[in-house]
Image (cartoon, rainbow, N blue to C red; front, side, top):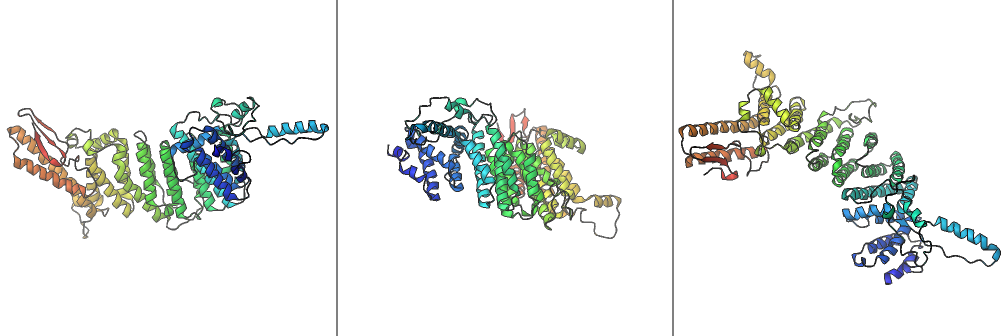
Length: 605
């Protein structure tokens, strides 16, 4: 009861509304939000409604700081927590609740001649005090703020729009009912006018009412979608601000307010145009990339589109992008894209490998998405580092994107060993798994024609994929690495027995020393597999039992190869089979030989 009296006319909190102290009114907004969300008052919805009414009145505060704080409280951003449910409820409040201002006390007239004037004035006041949708009040105030010449006001308004986008994304992610942006924002206030007009006992009791009763109304011009579109048009004009920090906040607001069902062409064009300005500091650009990361976590369906936007950053400002931040975005989007979107997500990463080198001098195409600005003389080197990061990312994650692992391979044992024709092998690989085949093609091209650093990384990435993949991909990479190590010109001279008097020991690509250990590991694996097949056939033909010494030798070979493989990349030791997924059935003695993780090759009766 005491809390309820505080917000009644003449109460202490009502007096705070009229104080000149801005911080006091900011604290009042936070207090009203905290009390209206208190679980202890769940049984007193009337008190919660009264504090909500005071909070909504602060949306009309002449101070931008107080108004923006009230908007953030409505959106569920009053404290440091980022609870999705609270954010979704905040968007619901903004789009479905209304502000009903209290009626002003009537001033009695002394003369009978002024009765008609007082009556018309009262009716006019009543018309101006009709219930107003919160979203309409907020949009009108934000549009006014974005026309300000004050940079702090512009920055704060853009931040409010960003938080609005977060609450909107949370509501869509949770699939709240009655979130239809085609609803007329005036629907509930019009319905309220037609209801009982004798509402004078307590004007605060139902100061905020939800419009779920008329959520199906879609008529009229002022729909939620239309007022949002009007606001975003004003927000887009703010990218012309000279302050780069204001522009960065505007871009983050545009990213959060972008709907996954709308075209991203305009947003991509704005970002590509803005990043042509060399005044952008590196920390600010990486902060925008982290915004893309947070946007994906809120809406995983936008993974591919967000990767396309990240490609713009890698293209326009490669020297200012942190490769670790970009790889974090790649990894998160790839994991969250789902089985159906892994291929497209990986393709968005491989596009970085196709970026052209920086073009010197020309101002033409500075806003092009696929052209690197050469205003920074280190752009070429920076782009090379990003390409190197993309190559490493492909090597580490291509198997995951393609769902192809040697320990889970669907290829029957021995199939690739009998497929000696290279053309048939490549065709089979491409038709079986286009995602992995496409990644191998990109990596092979980088290993053959990239810069020195990129070629080294590509060779290591190919080795990683060869170790983790089943056949025929492992054999395909094995043949390519052998050809790369030998070098085309060197192999031709060797066949012709020609010499120009110089040392012919080096390969044409210069990667021979690096590739030899990788090829040696694959040689060891194939040799051990061939030897095991011969032993199995020998035991089968002679109907001979496997001795403990022979099983111990196989186990030692298994462990030795597993240790060698682990030097190049991570593999699950309990599942990885360096000798191949071989299962041998002997109907004569009912023995089945099988690798069981680190326990080695064991006979099972």
